Structure formats: C-alpha cells, structure tokens
Figure 1 (tube, chains in turn orange, cyan):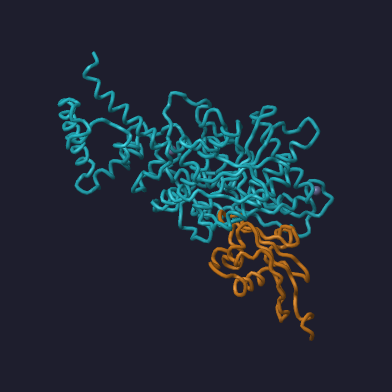
Figure 2: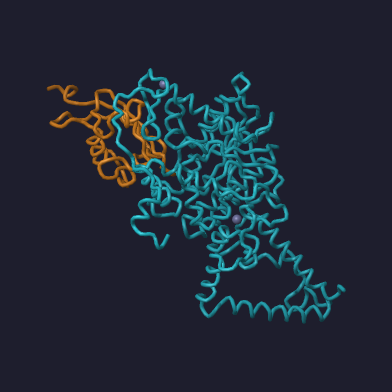
Length: 104
Length: 470
Ligand SMILES: [Zn+2]
Ligand SMILES: [Zn+2]
C-alpha cells in the first residue's frame, strides 16, 4: 500500500481564539492514517486532543465532543446538519472550529 | 412559593424546553425550500447560505429602524475591536449605506479602534501588527478609521493633544510609555480578574465617549451581541451593577446625555455572527485578551459565560430567556439630570441609602469585621485633626505655610493623596468594589481625582467660611 492511499488528507482550521491553543497556527493540513476505524468527527477530536493540542485540552474538548461554545463546520456547513459527532470524514474535507467564547 | 407542593410546582412553573433531537441530515432550507441547508438556528430552523444572509441583514436593519434613533446624516463611531461581532457590524453598516433603496442607512460612519495592548499584555510588535490590520480593514471598507489607546483615558481633560489618530497602512504606532506604565500600575493593583475585566470595559467606554466628542459624533455603535448581553446581565448582577442594567445591556445607553452608545448587534447570537463571517468570507482580527487560556473559574464574567453556554447547549432558549428578562428591567425612560453620577462609569449613583439594602449590609459587616473597628478609630482621628486645624486657623494666617504646623491652606498639592473614603461618595456601588481593591488611587484617570479634590476643597472652604455667614 502506498503512503498516499493509506492516508486521509483533510484540512483543519481554528478561529475565534481557538488557534491560541494550537501554537497560534490557524490552518493545519493533516494526514490521518487509515487503520481499522472510520474517521468520524468524534475520532478526529480524540486525535486532535492527542496529537495537535498544545495546552489546556479542557478548553477545547469536553467529554467526547467539543467544549460548548465552540462551533464545528465541515466544508462551511453546520455539523448539526451532518450528523454531528457521527459524521464520517471524506478525503479533502475542511473542518473549521470557531470559538465563540470570550478570549477563545 | 415556599409552601408549594411538588404537584403545584410541576403544574405552575414553566420550564425551559430541553433540546429535542431532530434528524437534520441533508435537510433543505426552510425558507426557500429549494437549496440545501448550511446552517441550523434555534434547533430546527434550517437556512441555505443566501436566505441566512438575507435574514441576518434584515434583522440588523429592523433593529436599527425600530429604535428610530438614527437621524439622517448622524455622525457615528463604529467601535471596531476586530472581534467577529464588531466586523460583522461594520459590514452591515457598509452594506446599509451603499444600497440605493429607501431603506438606505443615512449616517456618516467612522471606525475607531481602541488599542488595549498595554493591559492585555501584547508585545509592541503584536500591537503594531494589529494596528496595520485595522488600517487595512479601514481601507477595504472605504470608511475613515482612527486609532486611540486605552492609556489616553488617564489624561482626558488635561491633555490638549488629540485622543485619536487617523489609521493608515504605513503608520508606525507610538505608545506613551510613561502613561502606559500608569495604566498598568492601575490594573496591577486589582486583585481579581473580575474587577480587571470590569474596569477595562468602563475605561474603554469612558474613552470612547471622549473620542466621540473629539470627532464630533453623536452616536457610538458597539458590537455587543445577545450572547454577550445575556452573560453581562447575569455577571453584572453579581458584580453589584444591577441598578445599571438598562444602561449596560439595553439597546441605547443614554447615561452620557449628549452622546449615545447603541448596541445594534444585540439581536444576534454568537453562532449567527460566526456563520455570517464564514459565508461572507470576512476574517476577524483575533488576539489574546485578559481571559485567553485562563480557567473558566477565574472571573465572575467567565464563570457566567461557562454556565450560560453549557446550559444553552441542552436548553437552546437559555440566552433568549435571560435576554428578554433583562430587557424588561428598564428604568424611567428619561434620566434625572439632577442626579449625581458615578465619576468612573457615569451611571446615576445607586448608593443613596435604603433600609436593609445589600450595600448597607456589606458596609456594616465590613465595619464590624475590621480590626478594632478601624473605621471608628479613623472617625476619631479625623475629628481630632479637625479640632487641630480649627485651632490653627484661629491663630491667624501669619504662620501659614512657614510654621511647623500642618498648614490648613488647602491646595491641590496637599490633597495629592486621596483615600478610598474620600472618593467613595462619588462612585456607584459597582465601581466602589473595583476601587476598593486599589492600594493607591494615584493611578486613576486624572479627571476623576481632580474633580474629587475640587469637591473636597469646596467643602473645606464652605466649612471655613460658615462662621462668617449669617
Ligand atoms: Zn434558502
Ligand atoms: Zn460607577
């Protein structure tokens, strides 16, 4: 299996102060290994928590979802219209996290 | 209420509805019924991009129109901080003045950015960068833009220099280090983040009102949205600002008299604003604030925000319920001109003693818990020094200023040190709580301390001449 076939490439964006928890980097191009699980948003959040979050995980993730006050958009559409946490990511998706909380 | 049984309770109390679950996967726009929905509001109202932008714009114009506050050719300040809400407001105003239908917004806007970097702990480079971003925004929208900095609120009356400068892309932002140091010392004395956040807001408004005067503007638009205001309503009650709620969260803050502060974004939720920004492709200018990366428990305001956002998640009518309840708490339409106002926030003083007010209770408990009734002791020393000064003045003025006696000529110099007791009478309850945290009042804005000093001098003078009056 070649490396590009075994990977799911997506773009992650953080705005509204959420980027402060990611070394102030707003846009991340990430490659997720396609192992035996499907990449739902729920799994993606866990992955972000373990691989990308630099500090204060509780300010981003709460339980198995995002902290209330953080909006999630997939390809500029509300994740509530896509099944929320259960949405299955596709190659090339852009997932945008916007913090609406004061100070991010 | 106390005697209500469980049954009564269930029947009579209306509870907020818990979030019902809807399957919205692949839903169509509820408004046009044609396009695929891209955002869902109020749990089940689905919108496509275009219908969402249309209704968003309509709501803004309706809020402004309904208020009947804008007169043709009013000069207004758009207070743009770079936050999504303030930039959405800018876009809406720009769109509003450009349309050609009779619905056109008839006003002359300018942008004012307040650099709070000295308090927020930004580096000079960061501040310069934000300043240039603001200049670019100004240029993009073709609306004149100005920059001012928070430290300028310390010298409003004494400085003859301008409070704000015009923004342009090649500008180099200068900071006044001496004044910024004073501003930082002012904030450093405050022990709680709650007071810091509260003071920052009060000083920002104080400065904006003065800038409005300088730029000859009669209105200031700020970007406070419904979510912000719901948090403010709850937090302000805890901060002792309940009496000022109509000013702090209403559509129009008329405490200043001539210049009015308006909140045209107050009918929008944070979520609506965020989607508007995405759909219109407007980037916000974000930077760390006092509460960035801090614990949600670190201030009353942040804890309230946490409480409300978490409740909102399961009970989607939380914000609107608080907001509408707060809206009903209005004061008597017109302001009593005779009423004394707070020197810091300019709200009418809410400190006239009423029986068993919470302020009275707080003061009493402070009095009896102070070591050896320090206040009583103070009182005694005060009255004895009064005796002393009477004695001195009766000796005539010949020794004045040269003798070893403490001079009784009250000059500004001798009143340099103000203490909390002297300034207290001129502050509202909420501002007293802030100022009480300060060890020294020397860093307060100059116009506040000088007007307190003047008042004390006048009182003293009146006292000195009262024996000669019939
Ligand atoms: Zn539509
Ligand atoms: Zn006040």
